[in-house]
Image (cartoon, rainbow, N blue to C red; front, top):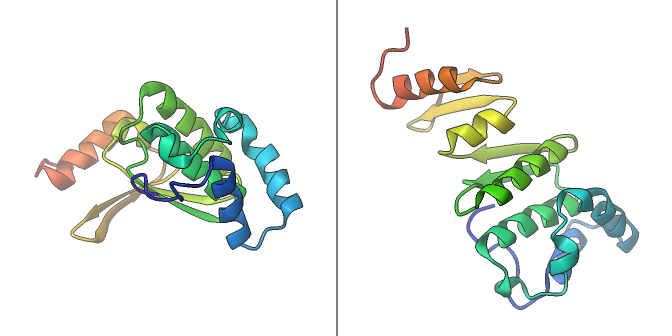
Length: 158
């Protein structure tokens, strides 16, 4: 998930969510069941379902794209800089959504937002020049910053 070009601009939110699920082979009953399952985490869906995707704000587009992935039953969800352009309210909502999604899918995110990553991640990997240089379980803020500075800013890792 990156940017705002993930769904069809001229379709409604509802049409986009249903289309993504149909592409993955879900039947109408399964789609409705998944909508109901994830609706508590996406309260804005009911108010936006009949709006054109192109009329949504950047943050709304991001959340609806994630909703479409959840409803479609994706087992792996990749998120590239998911907090970019989100206000605090949408960031909190995204954290709640990710907690729910992790029950049914592997959620992989790339981000520069360390505060968000330490709050939502069960595992954190650091990459340098395309190579994993550190694999960690849950990290606190201080541990994260020490590793970050050590790998990317030439700091001392001891």
